[in-house]
Amino acid sequence: MKDHDIEFVQESERIITEIADAIEDQDEECLIDVDLNSSILTLTAEQGTFVINKQTAAQEIWLSSPISGPYHFKKDKGYWRSRDGTELFEILAKELPINIKW
Image (cartoon, rainbow, N blue to C red; front, top):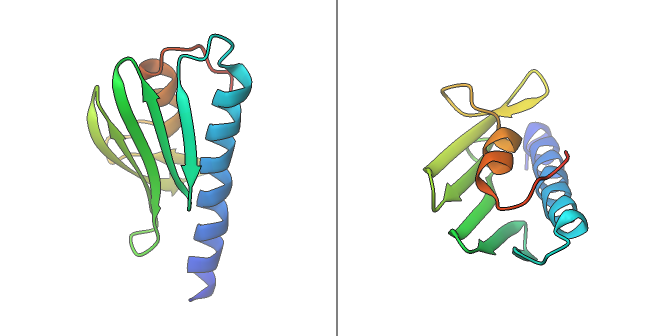
């Protein structure tokens, strides 16, 4: 594995774990089932199932949303952004049924 791949894997796994931890810490009403397994985060809520994972070859974090569909995020100036500039945490904050503080 190349150095930039190792850096990406470490950063993406850190972000995915932070998302899981933030939801588990702040979901006081237990509205979201959080399952983190092998760097694949599955979030199950009333709206459906969200899946977040890393794609090392593309250097992207992918989100599958039951509300808005698929997204691919690349690191851009410290933020994970889709091609249209939408930020990963912005989408999650808008679509998940809890108010998450990142």
